[in-house]
Length: 343
Ligand SMILES: [Zn+2]
Ligand SMILES: [Zn+2]
Image (cartoon, rainbow, N blue to C red; front, side):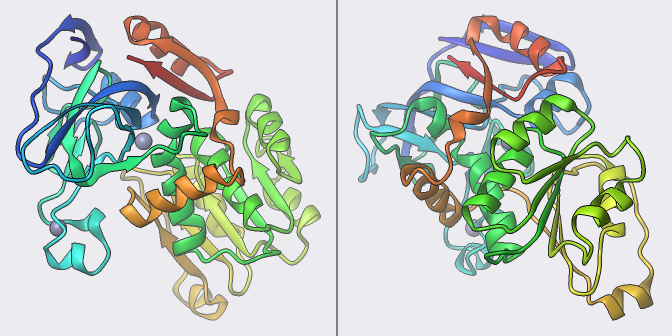
């Protein structure tokens, strides 16, 4: 089968590799579509260094079951499925507490986080555990379904952890792919004023088209004054989905009493400071959110199936796997939103 194999940073090679075989409780999925995540990009470029070679990235796949291993009970060949990239045991204390993304023996297919990293979806076929599969609703395209994992992360951050409530005034800092998904979840959940902050005119235009009530360029004047002009009492919830420490700092400045924040986008080790007393008296509530859970995946599928969130609306580019290097160029480009790979 064709696969995009990363042999070293910046050395992504298209090659012919054997089709994987399923072990006990595993399935092989013929990948139809997979999202190109910033995490994949950072691995390929060497911006994140926790990569062991050779590595097949790609952790946002949907496809069709092509083979099942012994012990597989719930899926059969030909089933259209969505794959959760994080595998879990279901038995350890973290799993039993409902936090399968903290699983003591977690693995990922093509992703980041646990020590056990298995080949991902930048390939024609991928093997994963049956417990990582969800049924793709027939009404959803493979492209839409492939975005279940990032949408599930957005739901988990905005609704489950930060407990957004109807009519909350919400600020999203950074409206690339994941920021737009957070914005669409907030819109579907009944946000009051919904303010997108992003230096890119392209991103701001997308945010306004997808439900933001206001969009602000943080480099045009003082962003705090800009937000205050729109939300004089300050936001109820601020989501950082930019991945840059300056966005986290802006988030900490944008608080009033009882504001909730979510550190959602940043995955790098820079530091930021908080004043203890002020944080105490403001009752600032800080959440963070990474990865996904089966519960969040299920919610994301429900959001898409009901039409509340249309993930296809954030797709800007689609490439066959053989053009993955062109996809990398698109990831580098200024005017791109979600890039999809069709293996
Ligand atoms: Zn991702
Ligand atoms: Zn576990």
